[in-house]
Length: 271
Image (cartoon, rainbow, N blue to C red; front, top):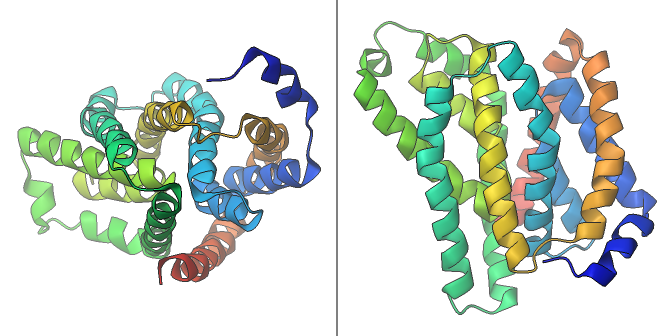
């Protein structure tokens, strides 16, 4: 919880390196639609922020920056609320259980930070692969002979809850994966839905998941509130600028470049 006497310092303690980091990440997210947690958390680690604080702060950062996307996508009817609910039925309880496990494990801070760091590395590697092979996965999911396309609605619901459960654990431990990994999973489960609707649905699911996980980390003292404000100061205009400059060249060249950066950074953390 934030103490009353800390409130003034949160808004007065402006630190331009963190604001610039927020500007850069926000710009990339606005330009390509990916890279939020996958870039922000490793940058915070580079700045010397502890893994637990980096994850906790980034989770609330993600919840705030993505919340505007729900309004936009809902207004354009790009959200399937049934799928969002099925995902949340798995992810929110999984997030709470993961937080409980971290808190009650009895592990010292150094060990918990090591677990988070290793998990972050592997999550980055899988996210990078999801970005690199996104189109191939989409093409595969649209084949008529793929067994996924023959699933009943009940089977889809069960599979979606399971995906949500897995995402809840990954996102709570690492703060990344809600975007790229979650969307790819939805591509496979719902190949007949338009891509924009799947993206909107995943954003609608990511906000409550990151909010619950972020609040949970905050309750353990794993959120740097001054850092969060500085990141938001930079990222909000960055997202605005990036979204207005988005074009196909960015999609074609920047996504693979981001994926290669994630592969490199992820391998350093995981191995």
